[in-house]
Image 1: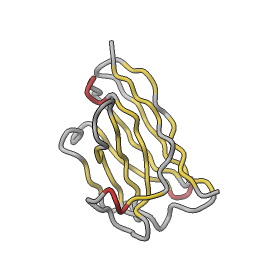
Image 2: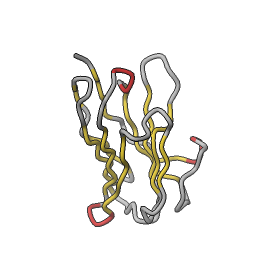
Image 3: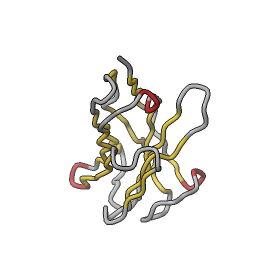
Image 4: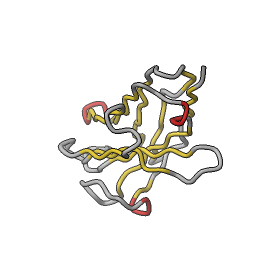
Length: 125
């Protein structure tokens, strides 16, 4: 079964950190750019970050620049999202997805596929 699995979410206080992982099952991530998205209750899905297949290009939403860092370890078939200085507005379900058929990140959500089931992040005191 070809799927992505997110992990690492949880409850954290404002200012805290979490590291999310996105692992692939049944296929290799080597040839895909990977994006992280999030959806807060009652809001649309928001693109958070993306990394190219080779890891040489990254993108971030303005709301997370300077706080989040995306990285990948192709040997472990895993992409990470390090989230620092977390704010209550970062509370959401976080998803990862591949750019289907592409090495490079896309600005269009419709270009992403094989979405994982998501991992919940709650930032609250």
